[in-house]
View 1: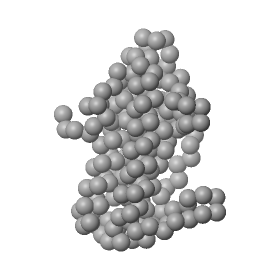
View 2 (view 1 turned 135 degrees about the vertical axis):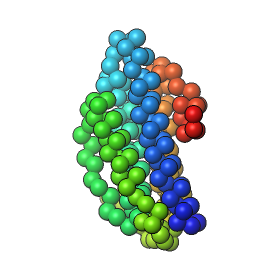
View 3 (view 1 turned 180 degrees about the vertical axis):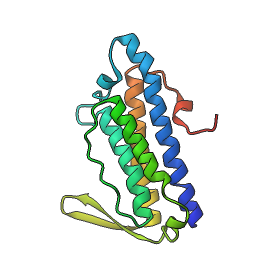
View 4 (view 1 turned 45 degrees about the horizontal axis):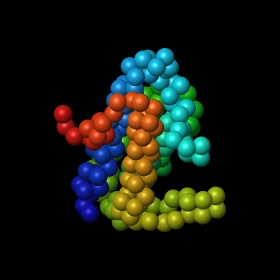
Amino acid sequence: MSQTGIFNQTVPVFTGMLDRMGAWLTIAQPCCAAKGISVDALLQERLAPDMFTLLGQYQMATAFAKNGVSRLAGLTPPDFPDVEKTEADVRARIARARGIVESVTEGMLAGAERREITIQTGPDQKMALTGEAYLLSFCLPQFYFHASMAYAILRHNGVPLGKRDFLTLQR
């Protein structure tokens, strides 16, 4: 995989989906208003008792986006404490993560596919992966999992999203 490949599989992928995730909140607004609830209340919904809330899914997706590109660029990921409570907070978090992702240039990803990336896999466990393995086997699957769960929670709660709302196709 070339540095352009790593760039094309990270920056536009993450920014595109982060944009979609922000759009889902906009689509949720009239649906919530019709039900007499706020989007803030919807952020506390989950699919199962042992899963993250919608808010947690947004926090995780944004974390994987900014952590992924930071690690691949050889940078320490900026810390994002999970302090969000409102739709406005979530939108600010998306914007902050998007800004970090966009700050990574192709040149910063030179050699990223071979860079050793160590991740914490448990309280006392770490795993070292090449940048390519980290991106393809860990970071992107995690990012899309949490984005998909956010989409599913919204759909489960009646937000009229369709596949085109998930895909980052040019419109």
